[in-house]
Length: 197
Image (tube, rainbow, N blue to C red; front, side):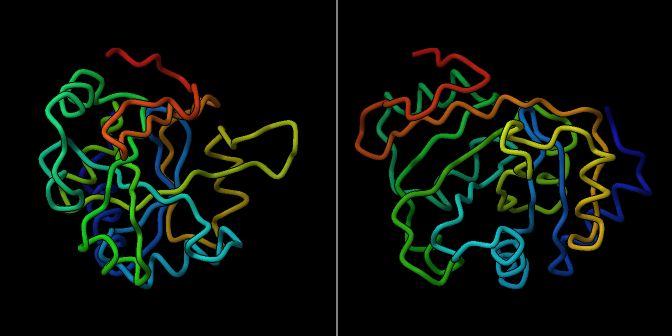
């Protein structure tokens, strides 16, 4: 699904003015702002109702070209695993470099990296030129882990975020979380996709 150019320009304008949006990914809908938006980060923390260091933020990238901007050097075998599984429904935990701590204003040792297999999310990142800072949208109902219907998301969040992008019904299986921060490949959570090593 490709957003029309006028709607797409609106999304980019909002993000470039410290806005917060909700975007589809290849798994579940996510709240997002530019990585370099301090105001956006603060708003997302408030909306999550958690202290900043307790929110599980990831960087949503269009491809792996941004990696060296935000992570320390990556072993060849780890890079091969990333390259073999991305784009895809994975969050890879990697060691963050000092640049990441500057954005977060606290010492962040690791960062989750996502390259979703989703045209809308990838197009946004390509257009703004920096990764999006994202965190997932949870459901109030204890039985339902995530919100999947964009109309329901719009109803709940329209007064809290600047824009909700309707990318159709989202999935309710989260990304598979893979910790590579110790130089090994360790699956912390099995999600939508199975890791190929």
